[in-house]
Image (tube, rainbow, N blue to C red; front, side):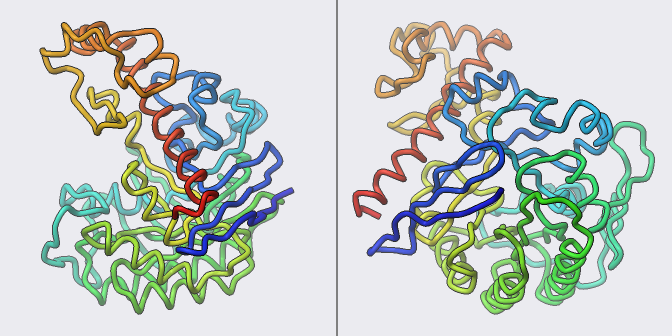
Length: 378
């Protein structure tokens, strides 16, 4: 059973407190969604991820399709049993890989650019390593080079076999370097694919439609109206949102104003701690980001005073915890000196300790966000 209940609406913004009920438990919103790409949060066991405060994880359809394959996951009892995660799960559709393995790889860019660049991908252009058609997307397996094909029917089939509580419709996540004509063609394709995903679904898993449109206000509003009118259980907002926090918030506000009030909204791939208030005040309910563990493995520690690089030599003599204000088990137990030593020696234990701390910090920030909405501060 899937249900979304709004418990409180802010009088200052579009923020709201809510609860998403799934067959594997409830999610208090706004919530940070932890990324578990290949059915794992790197360096951490599933019970450690839960201990760090994660309510829900999102796994990657494309990567799990390539290995170990959805048949093997289904044979193991589905993702929850396979990875021993007892709480709610999401699976994305593989649409982001249309960008990341395509134009993202070609131009060496992510979907969020630090500054505006020339839009140099015209309509009709194909990326080098994949082929995008109206019927679907052709990939090459990163494992053995065999051809892979994803379209709405195939994406939903894979996600149903994986068995997460929440699935996403297959879409094309366009490059931030795509021009307006390319985005128009891409958006029309995503809208057709959304309807196809609804048509082919067979299970009772919740299915979210995805709003695209890049940083073009008119396309975002059009997409939100069209996707919002379809019988999805919730909605994802994907693609680029501009080049600063203000443009992010405004674009999300435009989208959320057009979506049904009584259904949850997930902001895809955005979620540094400083983004949380912008996302929530614009009306977002859940949001995911690879930052806590991705940065941790490279030595970046998130704290209440900002972030720092634990590999720096000066921390070898620092006996304080990573964050004196943090209540996680890592900060209660280990010093910066010890963790700096581990990280400088490229020990996996160091990556694990920083990953746990960062994940705990992100979840604690989401909890603080909920308290601020409850108290009328946002």
